[in-house]
Image (cartoon, rainbow, N blue to C red; front, side):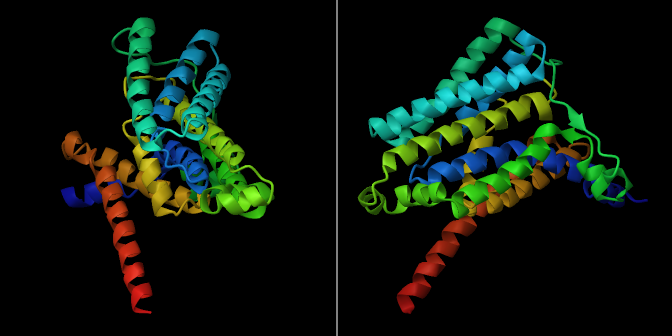
Length: 308
C-alpha cells in the first residue's frame, strides 16, 4: 500500500465518523441555542464565552463532587445565570448585543483562566469524572453505523433529541410562533397581547442553557474531564456561522455542525502526516467558505428578485 493510500484509509475511516459526531455535538448544541436568539431578533455573538464557562464549571463541579452529573448541574446553573444576565443587558436595558457578546467572550476567557489557575494550577486539570459512554449491542451488528454510533458520550445521543424538540418547539407550537414573531413582527405580536420582551428573555435563557450543555460535553464528554484555558477554541463563532448558514433552523444547524465536525476530524487524522498548525485550520477555513456562500447566495437572490 502506497503512502497516499495509507493517508486515505486513515482519513476516510469509521474512526473519522466517530470523531465527527464527538466534535459536532458541542457546536450543534450551541447552534440550536443560537437559533433561539436569532429567531427572537438577537444576534448572540457571545456563545463562545457561554460554552467556555459551561466547560469550566462542568469540570469544577465534577471535581468538587466526584461525579459528572454534579458537573452538568453546575454548568446548567451557570448557563441559566449567564443567559439571564445577557437578557438583562440586551432586552431590559437595550444594550448593543454585539458589544455585549464580545464583552461576554472576553470576560469568560479572563474569569475561567483566573479560576483555573487558582484552583487547578497553570496546566489546568484532567482525569476528572467524565460523562458515561453508551454501548448498544444491537448497533454493534451493523457494519459501519455500529462502530460509528456506539461508545459515544451520552450527550451525543441527547443532542438528537434536543434537535427534534427544538424543531418542534420553533415550528409546531404557539410559543415557537411567538418566538419567531418577536424577532420579525414584534408590534403585531404585541397587538395580539403577547410580550415580545418575554419571548426574548426565554430565547436568551434557552441559549445560555444549551451553550452551557455544549461546554459541559466539550470538557466532560469529548475530552473526558479535562479543562484547559480557552478550550472552546472559537466554537461559539462556528456555532453562530452554523445558525446563519441554516437560517436558524435547528435541524439544518445540526447538519452544518456535522460538516464542521467532519472536517475537524479529518484535520485530526492528518496530524500524523502534516503539521498540526496547518490541519487545525481546516474546519475554520470551511466555516469561512460557508459564510461566503451565504453572503453570495443572498446577494444573488436579491438580484433575481430585483430583475423579477
